Length: 189
Image: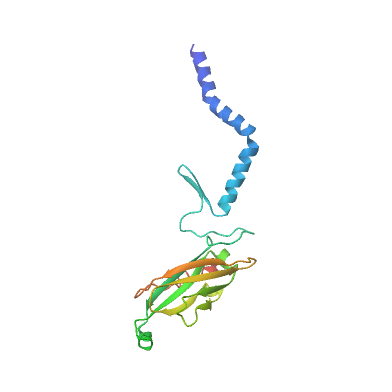
């Protein structure tokens, strides 16, 4: 009796792995298609979650471009800092601030940027401006006297349409400089 129960126990413990293996073999083409589709979505920046396991995009991280991939706002972000600039108060008759904006991304993504066009509110003397060079992360430095929204068009090599970004510019009396914090990421490429 004990030999029979041992044999049945062994067969029972192997049944599920055998059924799984046979089912997987039978549906191997479908399984391959599902795996390829999932990997394609992860490459495009999607996130796949199964239980406690997450594959793909992590919150707060910009993607590293894959060769031949179209770059999007998953690859770039605008970052800014602002500070009071009292030396400009008298000329403008009100408290003035300076702000500094850069395009942030991985070195691989930034290396593909040709140039950046910034669009400020119409009240600015020059509402459309070209950003700096790659070595400055395509920076823009400007004066402000109130909150505003800045838009950027990031022109990427080989892409007909720019990547569009925007950033709300809040004004603070002081903030740490971008240089050394986020700036010069392209130099690491």
